Amino acid sequence: MRLTRLLPGVAVLCGGAILSRAIARVTGVPSLLVAIGIGAVLVNGPGVPDRYEPGLGTHNLWLAGGIVLMGASLTLGTIREAGVAVLLVVVAVAGLTIGVVELLSRRVFGLDDKLGSLLAAGAGICGVSAVVAVGGAVRGREDQIAYAAATVLLFDAVTLVVYPIAGELLGLSDVVFGIWTGVSMFSTGPVVAVGVSYSEVAGQWATLTKLARNALIGVVVVAYAAAYARTEADGRLSARTLWEEFPTFIFGFLALAVFASLSLFSPTQLAAIDTTYSWLFSVAFVGLGSEIHLGKLRNTGLRPIGVVLLSLVIGSSLSLAVLTAVF
Image 1 (tube, one colour):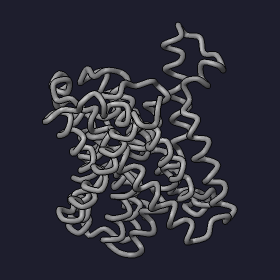
Image 2: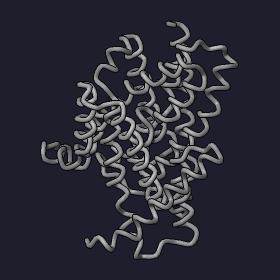
Image 3: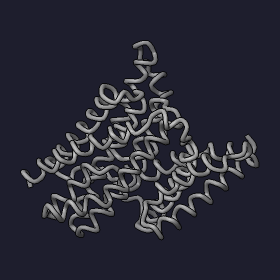
Image 4: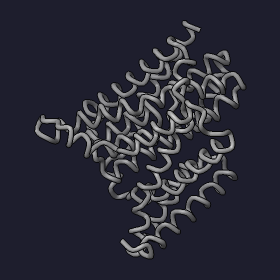
C-alpha cells in the first residue's frame, strides 16, 4: 500500500487526537473517551470518504505501539512490593470480575461470546489495553473491540466521579481507598487520577496495585487465545494456531517491562515514553471510534453496559468488604 494512500486518513487520526485533548482540557472528560466520540461522530455524521479509509485503518498499529511502550511503566519489582495479601486480592477480584462478566454476558444478557470476553478483559484487567490485546487474541471484529472499548471508557468517566465521593462518604483510609481503586476501577489513568486526588498515599497504593493487576494481561491473553483456538479449530489447539492468534506485540510490552526493571531507562526517557504512548492511544482511538456504527450498535442495545455495571457493583463491593476487614 502506497504511503500517499495512508496520509489523508492518518491526518484525520492525528487531527482528532489533538482535538480530543483540547476538549478534554476544557471539559474534564477523559481524552480517550473524547477521541472515540470524535471518530464515532465523524463516521455517523458526515461520513468517511473512501480515500480516508486506508489511513483510518492503521489505528491498530498505533494501538499496538502504545501497548508496547506502556510496558516501560511496569517493573517486575512492582509485584513484590505490593505484598502477598494485596496480590491475592488483585488476582481474586480480577478473576471474579472476568467470571461474572462472562457468566452474565453469555447466560443472562445473551451477548456474543467474543464481545463478552472483551468486556470481561477490559473490566477485569486493565481497561482498553486488555480489550485490544484480547481482541487480537480472539480475532474479535473491529466493531466489537470499539464498542467494548467505548463501554469501558464510559465507566472510566463515571468512576472518576463516583469513587472519590464514595471514599469520602465511607471515610475510607488512604491505604484502603488506594487499593480499592486499583483492584476495581478499569483503566490505569483514571485509577491514578482518583488515587492522587484523594491523597498522596492513596495515589501511591492505587498506582502500585493497578500496575500489579496490569501484569495479568499476558496470562489472560494466552488463556483467551487458547480457549478460542480450541473452539474455532474443532477442539484442536496447535502451537501454530496459538501463535497465529497471539498478539505478538505483547512480547514488546514484556521486554520493556524487563528493561524498566533493570533501570535501563532514565526518568527523562520514561517521561518521553509515557507521553508517546499516551499520544499513540489518542490517535488510535479516533480510528476505533470510526468503527462504531450506530445502526449496528442498536442491535446490541444497552446490554453490554448492564453487564459491566453489574460486574462493577459486585467486584467493587466485595473487594471493599475484604479490604476494610484486612486493613
